Amino acid sequence: MMETFYGFTKTPFSREITAATFFENEQIEEILARLHYAASQQWFALLTGDCGTGKSTLVRKLAATLSSSDCKVLYLSDSQLKPYHFYHGLLGELGVTGHYYRGEAKRLLHREVEILWGVQGLKPVVIIDEAHLLEREMLEEIRFLLNYKMDSHNPLALILVGQTEIRDKLRKQVYTAIAQRLDLHCHLAHFDEADTRSYLLHHLRYAGSASDIFSDEAIKEIFRYSSGSARLINKAGTHCLMYGEQHQKKIIDDHMVRYVVGKELL
Image 1: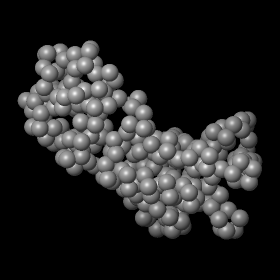
Image 2 (image 1 turned 60 degrees about the vertical axis):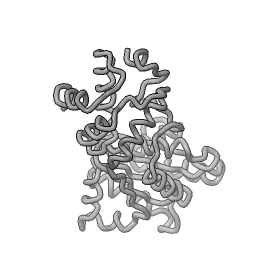
Image 3 (image 1 turned 90 degrees about the vertical axis):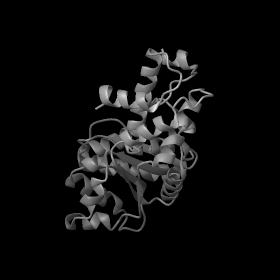
């Protein structure tokens, strides 16, 4: 086991890392601050980023750090999300179960939002992940949902999270009405080489390592392979540590990274 060989107390590069110990650089801190403000103001926000840049991880951090005394976070992630499933999913998150027609489900959701606001004093924050897969019907339904009480105020904060193509989709003329309602757009970029190094070392420290383990040249090779994608950094880091344990190498050098990338990774 690589954990025993390297003296780890936790597994580095694991999805089980807690929100409190997520890696944050200046870009992530800024986006989190903006999304916190969007939630507090009941804005319609969009978070984009390429595949593997850490969007879902970032919204996990957001959900964990929003005050439970001020906000109620409702999270949906469904590549085939339709209006019916959208309303039923949100109602399920609010503890309302049952089978309802689409119109009735919509009315029930508005009622539950009013209860959250008026009785419990909570602001609903809806996060929809994988939003780049949403079809036109669902995007139009979102527009109708935001058109509340003759557009006098937003009933909830809505944050769409998706790959970069949703930004390009919303720029098309057919989506002008919903694009104009956007209050905030944040884009999560790939890490640069310095952030890749910081990210790797952060995860090693999280795992309990007092050693850097990866040489400077190894980190450069991981950056070259990953192009700063958090997901690919995790994959390369994990496979390199497994290879190091199998070959009894306490330090991962650039030759080992190139071998692992060439033989074990796509």
